[in-house]
Length: 469
Image 1: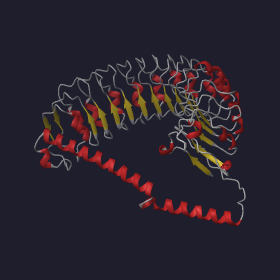
Image 2: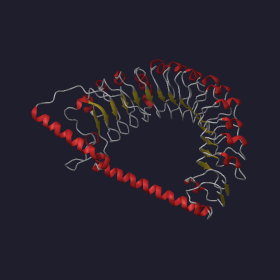
Image 3: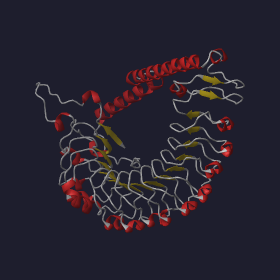
Image 4: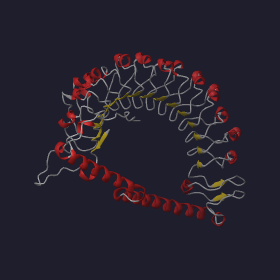
């Protein structure tokens, strides 16, 4: 398979030998030479193209085409010539309309039209898209859509990913029950007041992102047993339903920035939950159900009006990240010292005392430098090696200075490492030396063959379409 990438920043600026600036579509798109009709993958993203390069229509075997981040305003009427195209990314251009011929690309598996100004051409766009019955991934983010027709869900029954975020949708069609292969749906940043109950009946659905909407509740029928990640942050939810018990496979739940004052009893049935975000809810007390989630590793409780923690918090022995910032603690919550695997702890900057003695801490996290008001730091009885005991004995100021210096050194080391890796890649040094040798050998072999006879046109081996997340 031939793979071509035209995305080198060094040659992205318009230029010409005569000194006159050429049109971006000419200057930024290298001329295609003989043999390129075998190209299967082509990356022309972010090159300042103001038009779809006509020469691309010659690539009859092309399977994946990246044109995202350009200035393209229209698509050519002959785009149907790319009959083998499986992946087409056009997000972030200036398309106001799409041509009907786009609907002839019957082999398309993944299409992204996000972030184009198609306000006046929405109807045609949706009509064209619903003809692409083989689509598995469809992304229509940020197009100002006010409606999703039933026929989209009825015709595109092979969809596995549907992206509709940052639109103006107030409802989702009931025909969504037809998407039996759907695994991921993204509808955050719309104006949805309710989720369709049909979501709970989709047999393969794993990820539901409905954050930043107007949801007041989660309907009982909307919960499905296959769900792994559920995002409901920035809504108006005041209570979670009893059907939440169905989500036994749920690993990530975000209900931050809602109106929750508590959790239902069935919440303890979420035994697979690894990450939970309850931040910015008026809880006032930590729901005891949380302390029964023994698989929990990440817990966000920022700005939940807590004054203390539940004594059974010690059950969460797998806890690694705990955010308790912006609460109402008057003293350090002693329940934390029993969390032996805790690696990252966030507390208010106004917290003046931190008592961590008698634990198994081997090092302190770099983000402890944020505790600028810390006056008392007790670390006795911990096998600390970082910072060393001599630094810890000098008090919070010395510990903070040590961690700040360490952070600076690490940042500098990463920068140097990135620079040196770039040098090695450009000059093909060290582990990258073989790249130069291989390419030189291939060029020599090609020249030798060209001297003997004209190379026969063979069929390029097709590779799978690259999956975009």
